[in-house]
Length: 238
Image (cartoon, rainbow, N blue to C red; front, top):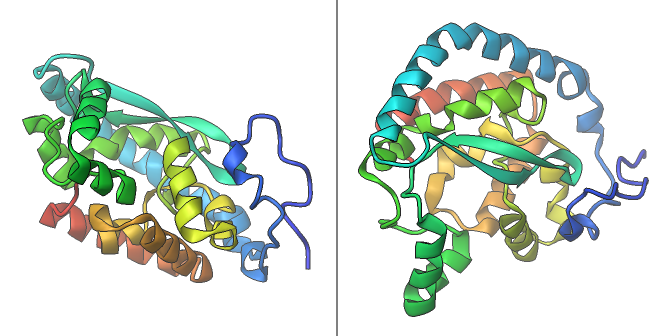
């Protein structure tokens, strides 16, 4: 069986992936769709969506700007094979969100435990009123279509983690379950988004990623895209 991870990791690969980069791949990742057609589907659907998405994105950007601060937010995430990239979102938090988080976790042990479990907070006080609506509808993710066009993300796949989130993911799931994450481009939507959303911990997310990897196909991606529309309409995001 071939091994996608025999070569030593490149210098810019996140160090927490060292333990997982030699894991063997499986035959499903050598099929035509994951290797070739999936990328073409990403490009075609994204280009088709641009005439609708761009006017909406500009309106949302102006709306976010009313809360003060910039309209966009960027953050380094870890992509396929452990390579970092810049992930874009509409800003949903107040400008001093990082400092506010540090103060909150230092003075509230219960919130600190909740953050350690999933790096999310219920009723997060840092999120603006506009941001709550954007997150509930997942419209804050629209700028990531740029990442899809650049080949850093896919329309469907595991969600991209920050370096700290990836470390927690590997700790919770172990390197054996990291293969499904590392072998794919992160996705704008995926199994975790339509079934778990923000209420799942890292071990559960690893299970979702593994399930998606084992069922990876054109049909599975189209079904997940359609299910995402329903999730967005129900506004169950966090």
